[in-house]
Length: 170
Image 1 (cartoon, rainbow, N blue to C red):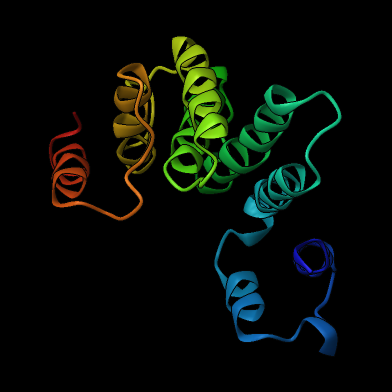
Image 2: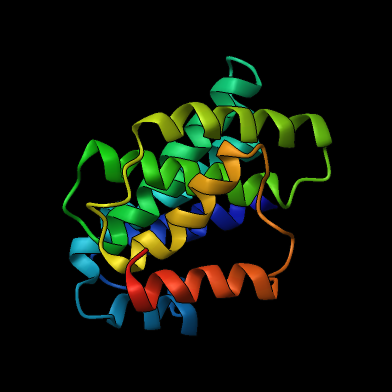
């Protein structure tokens, strides 16, 4: 079922015009956003990342997690701020792995996601990121360097960290 839903999203994002098949309020609203065309490749990459996670990747957990992080993380960061740099792409991958690690019921896979996030964090530099992306990536990079994934819910501490970054840039 998940793969069918992802195919629906991909088709709706890639279509030149929405048909009745994709005329759902969320798809209509997303496509109506100013800058949708610029964000489209990143949004499609996010769908690809989720599909990588669902299908399991051919090279084992490491390749699956990296494919997921490249699609979802790099895709989201590209959709939000299309100027691509390796530091921005790495920050997106770290954010995706951190977030996933905090929501997995499989502790071994969550550990692997944090470990991979720590490796990727070596190339992630938040100083050059716009504040919006810095607010997402900053806590993620700090946490994976400490061996932690995201909390399953937004905690007051995480909220305070994100607000500090948004207000003061660090």
